[in-house]
Amino acid sequence: MKPRRVLIAAGAVLVLGGAAIAVWNSSWLKLETVQVTGNHHATTQQVQTAAALDPGMRLSAISGAAVSARVSTLPWVADATVTHVLPSRIRISVRERTPAALVRAGAGAHTYLVDHSGVVLQDGGAGYPLIAALPLAISYPGDRLSLPAFRAAVGLLDAFPPDLKLRLAWVNAPSPDLLSVILTDRTTIGGEAQGRRAYRTPASTPGQACQGG
Image (cartoon, rainbow, N blue to C red):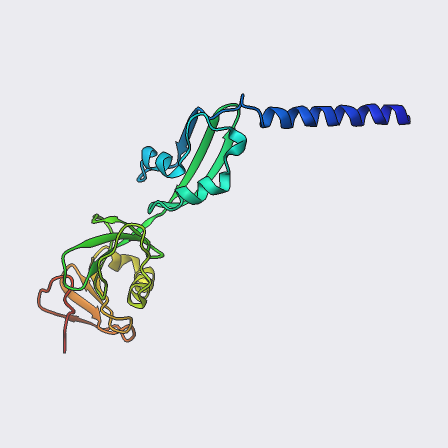
């Protein structure tokens, strides 16, 4: 290719690149719509509020990483991917946390729904294994449980035989080495993290450690 043609081609690339930058930074590309996908528990309004995006903002002024970080502070949101969609839309794709268990503090009646890592998703819930008798104070959605007893109880649930999971009533977890599993027929498995032996116990309620001889 002759030098003149090379210069012409290079000039065309610079012109097109400059035009693209000018368009990207122009006031023509203004935010009109914030689209939210992938959310089931966190509401669209909650995600949009956490994103803190105002109509009329220039798309080039919106940091996808900053928006993702703000949205990810919502208890149900594990992470969020932010995409600029020309000419006037931001799309926020949410990946939500997966509930793993209900936890109950001490002998109290209040329960919290948590994911596998211990993030508190919401107050109350149903349809998940119950971990009771935790040495736990008041928690709020968004908190993360770091109790060794909770981690031990989750590990026990992960290793629990599938046929017994259907008969699971709750897990008592006052400490990591004092775990016991109570089945729906009031059979207790264990009393310690190791040496899980099964025996019959009288009826008891979640939050009370079962005793046996």
